[in-house]
Amino acid sequence: MSIPGNNRTVFGVLLPLILVVAAVAAVGATGRLELAHVQVAGQPTAILEEVPGPDAGAACALDAWYVDEPPEGLRPDVLGAWQRLRAEAGEQGVRLCLQDGKRSTGQQQREFTEAVRLFGTPELAGIYVLPPEKSMHVKGIAIDVQPAASAAWVERNGHALGWCRSHQDEYRHFEYDPAYATAGCPAPLPVATGPGEVPGPETGPVCPLDKRYVDEEPQGPRPDVLDGWKRLRAKAETQGVRLCVQDSKRSVAQQQREFTEAVRRFGTPELAARYVLPPEKSMHVKGIAVDIQPTASAAWVEGNGRALGWCRRYENEYWHFEYDPAYETGGCPAMLPSATGS
Image (tube, rainbow, N blue to C red; front, side, top):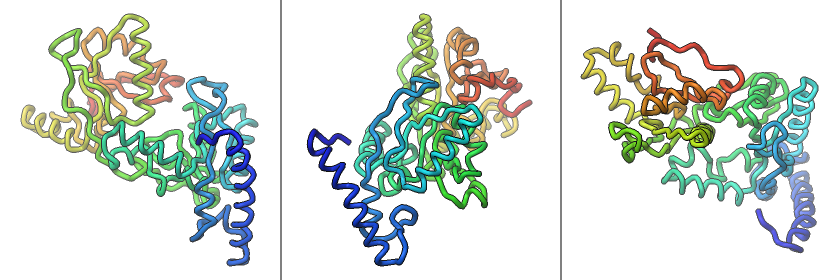
């Protein structure tokens, strides 16, 4: 949020006063201070949701691709929980970078508007960036932690301090609830809106390296996967290698069409699944897989992609690669003979 000159100073002075007045009103109405800890109807919650967070931060000391912003604007109990989490990590030699914390309604709306521009519809955008009225960043109880190894530490250790990963498609996103410390973490949702239908392109322009293939523009993969793909393609280009994307994200419907055609071609679902998985098992539907052509380009990815989180997964598909940031440090898992494991 950009507040020019003296207006920023005035805003900085007035906002705490407004919050104090709102808090006093909440105490008078209920007998306890509810602004920071409980969502209540009326002005106090509205004011809390208008508290902005930083628009940026210093570069993350572990990976300059990310930032480490100050945790300004979080609910006081959430701020205390974040400080305890970071201290616990520090005692174990782990550094946590705060990629994103509190957002105001205005900040979240800008993020959501940009996502709509990128993905085309509010429904598709909402799978990656929630509108302000649904965002836990706006409510001041969510943080995004980077890099991947730091987020993995939080996923393993955070629940004891009230922090849980909320969405399967966002390894970095954690939400705070003190009840998690005793009850444990709820099962993460597939995406922020729950199960979603994100389609990918049906085709793309001809691959300039080999006209038998296309080079589609990746649309619809998880944002971290899209970032991983951009880094992979940029590294290839520095070495004079062109990567063509034959296929990437597919919706359930797109994958079902592929699977149905494979069943027709191979005769049984069991045989078809060796080459095209049904939607509920496909990594293309989950938005973490790309198919690279031609053969030489795929071979380059197999030889160089692991350092950026990309690994070949099946012996019978030289073109198929899946993204997991854990591969960067843990290495690639053993390849399966086929998608069905046999």
